[in-house]
Image 1 (cartoon, one colour):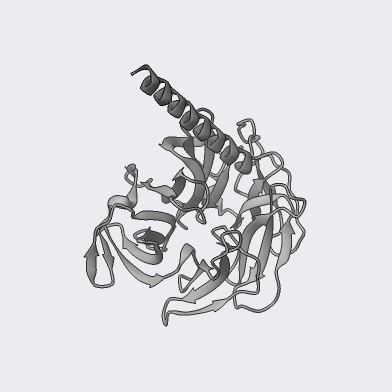
Image 2: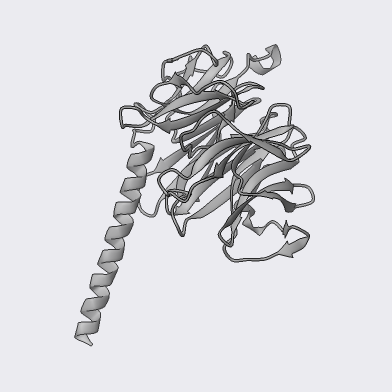
Length: 335
């Protein structure tokens, strides 16, 4: 009995040590920075490229979105992931302690904190609808890479119109092909909202396959459209989806960026040949921004590439991630 108890204690210690190492590793990848609020002068009212500065962990703004390399002053709040649209911004923060937790913070255009939600896991994806009324975020509950086996995600949707929070959309009825589908390994991530604030696109993973799904919030249903689509990003005109496609079995470099035309379901690769593990953002109707590992071996850099498949990748922001193009505020938005 004593021997069994000793073995049990050792096993628990090993598991705790592994969990601690995993959390620390994941936090180091995302950048461990002191949580700070935005400077009072930092708002979303000025147009430009907003992004996460990887050196400080804070949100920065650069006046340009197409020319570069660009740089900005990181006077925004500290975030691990960031996105903004309409009158709202969404910031995901990794909270200290074990188990891993994420704080999703909703801001207005002046970066006044409006709401916070704490969920399990490590910050991964963040999106806001064009109106600013719908927000979604994804966290890694297990594992810290889509290339890893046995990863698990948790994706939430917050409707600011009603205040209703869907803590996990894994419960949404799913149709694969023409068949209602049930499985314990269903994971969703990378939600993108259409302009009607009802329809959405996301990735679902199950049975070792990934699918692009189209969802309906009012009907509370989702259906698959196409296989091998991850981290979809809907174009401003709602006609195309940028995504990463698995093109290699190499776990170190499995993906390539593609664009899918929704009307005819035709796809084409982009000129970026490096493996991109990010949810690309449309900086305008013809340009995509995304993060790649930093050229100095630290953090990440923001690159752009034309959406039509031509041209070449262009370094936009050294030491940046989570890019989003914010237009000039209207007089109503400025308040």
